[in-house]
Image 1 (cartoon, rainbow, N blue to C red):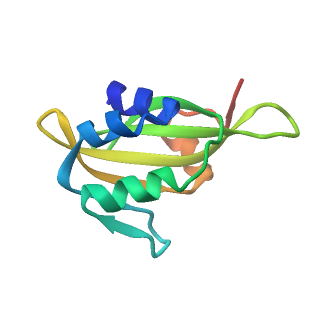
Image 2: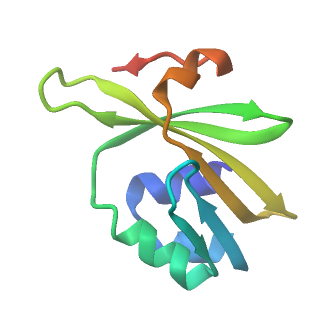
Length: 115
């Protein structure tokens, strides 16, 4: 999970490609966004822009998860944005399910903002 977080923070596309299995998926329930295959997942990730990020690792349903925070330009703080639940296939990433519900963060021991 650490390699995934580092790669995301650096927007290191090659490192993210190396982490994903060929048939990786990325979903964002309840949004209709669903991407299948490493190329589609990478196209989505690279199309999200370059927001300044922070993270907090956690677990959800026994799986590794990460709470992502994006910098709020007005306050300068990083605000809770999405909780990603990660499904691994060995040491590689098979599924990313992003829940864009910041109100869930406290349930996972995560703060609503970080500095």
